[in-house]
Length: 306
Image 1 (spheres, rainbow, N blue to C red):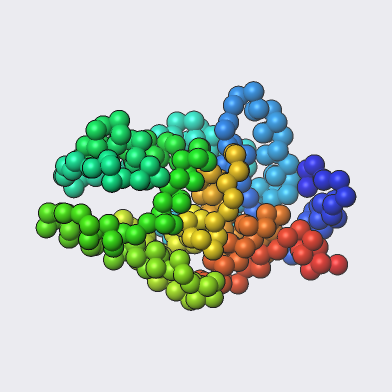
Image 2 (image 1 turned 90 degrees about the vertical axis):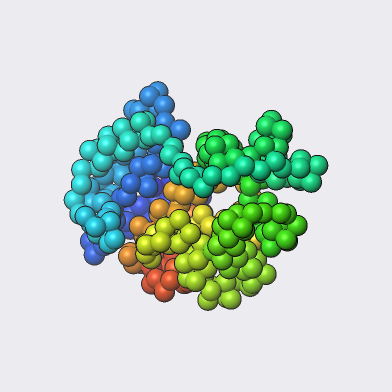
């Protein structure tokens, strides 16, 4: 809207949006975080210009959570105040990793570990030794890499897609406590892993139960908004929805923000995006959770009003 593309309907879309009186067009924290991605002070003037433009579209109406963080609502919030708060939050943000309190030590036979395994390089540097302490180090390493580096994320995603957890447990010797832990983990992960052979309709039918199982492993009190948000990232691990990874485009950080958009738009009449893969994944998620929001491209949106 701010910089219309050549030979596109962007200007017509702009005209429709700016004249709409029936609808609110709120901004969310996800829009601001999108614009603050890879923030540098040298871009501050350009970013503020875009935020001011967004203010004119949204009339400073924001969508966010109520005090319980369980319900979405729209309210007035000066966008520049929100921008300054979110920027401060991002610049001071430290990635937190949940501590693996479960004590263990294993010596991994590196000759049996595939070089495609996400931990191969990490374990090679430690002679195959793994403990709860080194797992914390690995999670921190993976967390920092996976959000920005498409090669690391691709390796992780492909391993999940091709893994055989059941066979791995059968072929290794574990203590009773370790076996109980792994079997519990399997109960939560397997509904998703087993869905890799489903077609899209069957996956949609099962998706609510799949996400219940997957996300309840670490978050026992999950709700639909949480599943709407996190489903977007989980879908990216599924063979039906794997996107081709592009530099700086759909690394995990971007995918998580797209999940935020999916969640925030779930109470809307229309959700408009020019990204075909975003529309496909969001439409699937809304169908799976019986969300009525219409997911449209710009041209489809224009056709609704012309």
